[in-house]
Length: 267
Length: 294
Image 1 (spheres, rainbow over the protein chains, first blue to last red):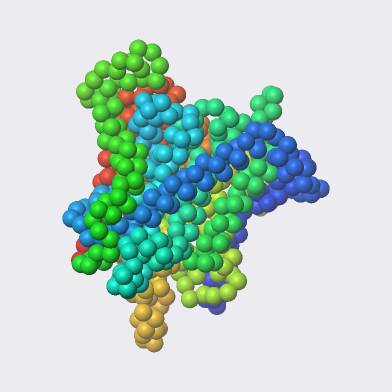
Image 2 (image 1 turned 90 degrees about the vertical axis):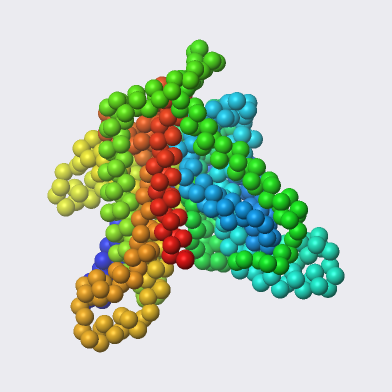
């Protein structure tokens, strides 16, 4: 009896969580989409429409460019710092780590949007890809550095020690031993960094002005017709195309490594 | 892990840390500290005070505390955080974790998959999904209400705060579900089995065995979801803070003052307050985490 009840509860909860998502599965294929759920004549026209719309394509390209650049810079610097924190002994190490953890949860997009805007204005980096990417890197580094440090801590030091004893130079050890060992961890943080940048709305919304630089998350707000009515077909199809990479990357990471918990802020 | 026998020299370590620390220092730590200074000036986005801002002391803070819109948004934020983070996400997350505990197979994958999906879909997409879901004329929720004989509700007008609480509960429950699910895994099965042998009811099992054992995780979870929910901006995408400021969270209030009214000094003073609240919550969290490890 209790098994049946918990089964019913689970099915009901799954249904409740699925309901708002259904629109994302039906509307992109609806020839005349509304805000409701219906799929009288499935069509791919909306999806083609996205690729024929110049600002839609620009948005996706900008998102890809900004996320990739952030991913490369933040993954490289986070890994190097994490390796140093894990493998070197120096005074003040724990203090730096403590401050970094604190920063990662205290300074959010919301709490820092005003000073970040003023800083970018002073540096002449408002409305530039570079400014946006620098802010992303700074914001994502602490959390991802911790994930990476956990990962490096879990690798036995014996590999590097053995190579050093064998007479390899420190540079060779880093390149031939440490780097290959770190790669799985780097893959995980690279995905996490890419996904958080790709999904972010607030930071580009505040720091960018030109539509030509806007990522997909901001560009989607320009999909209105001449009289200001949202073009639902385009919005729905765009939402789907924009969401697919995020879900795909999460599935890959989950398959390979499983979900784990880290301090810090997701977005 | 303490390392007495370093693999890399101090010089190499410094070189390795430097880029990361510079990025974090300039683009994360500095803005947070600078916010305090800007908050003490009358800096604006346009006009004279944009070029030559003057230090006005605590005038901004005094003005904020006098502003009825600030009190309005603070009260909305408190209800939003309590309703969606503590009651919504944690209760629902724990319920899901308990229901899924020791379960395997397709149903578990489907349920956790859907809940996690709600958590990872980009926020602008989620906002559109909920605008559609809660739409007065065509929205699925109203269609379902109509199907069981209830009238269509104008969600954002009739229940503005409840609507964003509902939205944010849906959005964030996955984290609590995953964290508390992992917590349940740490309970030795023999404890539960013993309780079952002596005939404890499910409620007693939950209250006397499960709850005390996962209490540290519950506290961690509560603090983390409180910080995150406090710093959420996505309701702006749903309602823009309206109707009539009824969903204007502190985050949206900051945005409106700084970027719509161009009052950067004033906005920065609000940021300082938000930073202080975050700092308090995070410090409590770190204290507890450290005490547990010791």
